[in-house]
Amino acid sequence: MRSKSSAIYHFMMLPAVVFLCIFSLYPMLGSIIAFQSFDPVLGMWRSPFVGLDNFRYMFMIPEVKRVIWNTVSIAVLKIISTELIALVFALMLNELKKAYFKRVIQTVVYLPHFISWVLLAGIFSSILSLDGVVNNILGLFGVEPIMFLGSNKWFPGIIVGTHVWQQFGFRAIIYLAALTSINPNLYEAADIDGAGRLQKLWYVTLPGISVTIVLLLALSLQNILNAGFEQILNMYNPLVYETGEIIDTYVYRAGLKEMQYELATAVGIFKSVVSFGMISISYFLASKFANYRIF
Image (tube, rainbow, N blue to C red; front, side):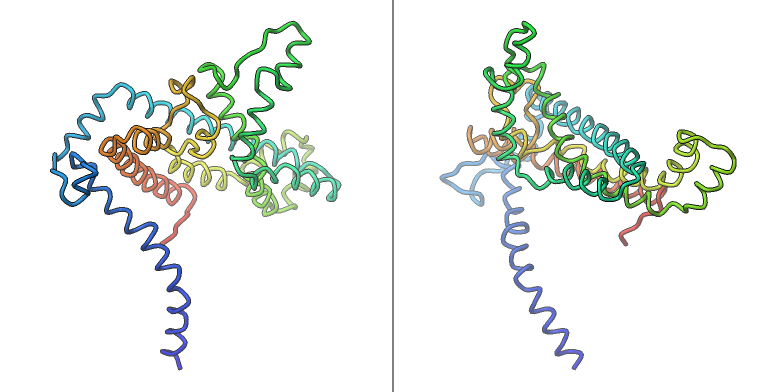
């Protein structure tokens, strides 16, 4: 009976395994292009090998260095801003006494998490256009129209700000869950000692969720090279390549649009190797400071 039931469970896993092999494992064979002078006519298996020449060429191109810097800077700003605002929002929401009002606000702010960037990009592009709502409001104060999505000065901030708006409500759920684990007796003891609201926040609330804060920050390190491909792809344009191009969009543009297959694959492999290292570091820090383990 045991072997029969095990066979049923393995059979249930078969579609997922097939999906994984077709769409995740098999495409990895294409990584060999990074070590070739790829010729679409000759194909992946007959194109001449050039060793690490594509990687050397990658680090010689100033554009690639700029793309890496853009990716890291945008990703770091997203991580810090999202975690900070989510934490502050969770602390403020936790102070509300009316449970119904609290649930309504929580529901409203985490709903954007489920909206695709294909739709959100269109909404923000309309709001931030030259004749959009923002420029119309600024025009009332005599400010000239600003090309928000066509300016290298404004674009990174818009990307970070819209990401935070979409994600902080959903992220705050984790902090709210952590807040519920704090022993209410600690607050009662603080009240007896005459502690004010800020003192209880500093000496009871924050220490009570400090492990969660450290854990989330540590695990966020693995996203240091993920600056939001879908978001930027749907919002950027050639005018903001200087400050808005990231590794993922560069791989897409160089590989599929400009047909620099070897360079695009080399950049993709570089990102994968660095990301694997950051994942290892993040789980080490999570295990060391928050006692978090997956194995």
